[in-house]
Image 1 (cartoon, rainbow, N blue to C red):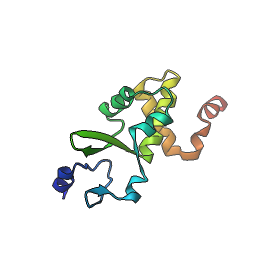
Image 2: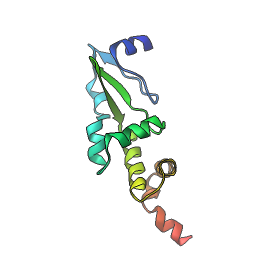
Image 3: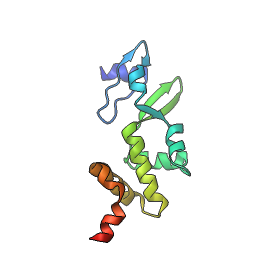
Image 4: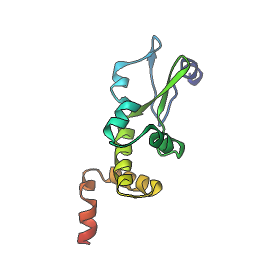
Length: 123
C-alpha cells in the first residue's frame, strides 16, 4: 500500500494516513493540511529558507505532494501551530533548538502556556 502512495506522489508522515480516491486527496483531509503559503502568512518575516531549515533539522516533517515534476509541502494544523510557536521564540533571539523545545513544552501544556514568562517571574 505504501508503494501505491509513493507511486501516486503522496507520502505518509507523522502518523497521518492519506486516503486517495481518484488520484486526489479527499476534502476532509485537505481541510487539515496547509500549503507553504499559509505557513509563511501566519509567521510574519519567515521565509521559505527558514521553513526548509526547520524541515532539515527534523523539527517538522511536511507531507510531500507531487504535481508532475513539482513537489509541494503540506503541513498539518498541529505542525502549523508548532512552527508559529518556534518562530515566536526565534523572533526574540532564542536559538533554533531551544525555540523548538520551548514550543513543544508549550504545546504539551496547552492553555497554561499563555503566560510562561509571568509564571517564571512569580516563582
